[in-house]
Image 1 (cartoon, rainbow, N blue to C red):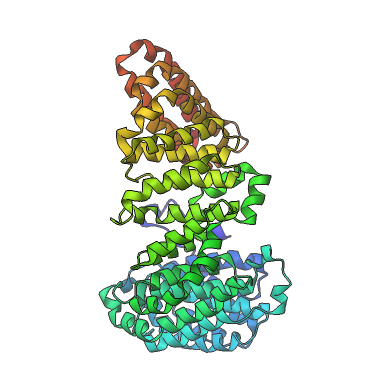
Image 2 (cartoon, helix red, strand yellow):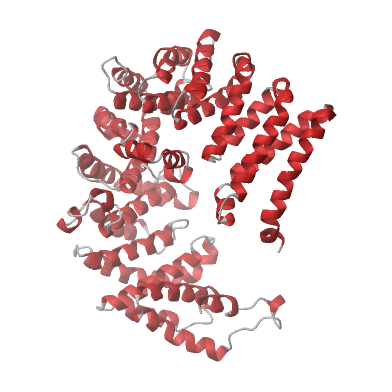
Length: 593
């Protein structure tokens, strides 16, 4: 029914006559009963009904459904949780319709929300006094509605700074209030998914988003200048101080904080530090933050250890998945470290802290965290006149030797540092040669696949950023390195690896041409395995599109190199033809049907 309604509720003019449409009588009947049906329907059915009403509202709200708002008002005020929940689910779907629209296109929603938001706020303020899971489910729905309503556009006529401040107090109350005993009984690895922490996450998302887009004085559109000035003057510092005194302090004291909430708090603090008034509050606590929040989050975790030990391939996918990293606390800690390090006089303190954790007595977790810190601040170090001339010495003394460390996490992180510090000015070619040789040795000899992968990525970064300086050091090893990288592609299917082959082919033409046939055979074999050896070809295509395209790009580069070598092209062309046939066999039906 959901799909039928989607296709036939409103038919495009060019399809009239070839596709039927619901009659006006049927539409009226559905609209008269769908809200009530959503309220009483079981949860699995409710989701589909909400999708249906969203499609109806997209076409009919407000002009073709004038009774809609009149039906929703009493439900929002209802004492029956089923009716309130149904109304909130519908309202959230309505907000999603207008979420990405421009301000002038949002007028119907804004007019409706102007009347209903005060009612919702009153209900919300009553609900947050109740810690039960059923109450929190309703709270979460209200939070999602508010976030969707303000994410990309804030109407300051209905949400003036004074009106918003009343909402803000409720959001902060949710973030700071202790979770009930019922939540504490849930195992820590499952606590993230409880309704109490989901409410805190959504409340923190709103606080962060509103500040980032509308409240950060000096960094907002003209339309929000007045709002931002008042927000920064009256609300920002109390919020920052509360988050530090409660959320971050709880984390320091070993209490559970969900990863997403911790990430959002760190990002909020990072954004707020653009203002001098916030730095004055944070500065006295800087060393505490560095030692007890930032540094621990930049060290590898117990979860990392377990994942690498249990499933190396999954560990690789997790580490190189941009979306996985997006909301990790370690990402928030990196951002905060970068922002704080820009403050005058702080970089020296950060470097001293790093060196304190790179002593002969430091354990592998401390070394990993310290190396991670170097990678985070490396770009800034290379821009500061005071430090940029000494970065190569730091790498030579503290990073390169650790590419052969007994700990696989330390070896991985040392390669990671080179990857992100590849723009370092190497005036001493001997230091650069030691770095390159260490990476090549890791690619050839290290027994851990993640270390090999990171070493290869670091080598690619050096090729890109050091220009011809590193070519001479890599040239004697190019064939071995290329073969190993090809095997890594076959083994891991990581999207980042084909670009390494492309870089090697581009920069070592003379060395590549004699072995181009073998490379082409290997690449086509990898491509075929990516797209053919599975029971679910469509899923594999979805998973490895970037990697497959990278291989095709490399094949194109190789063919370009061989234009003046007809004797080799005659051998390579049949192999490439096999690849083309695979493309037509696997994708022609889905792309040209």
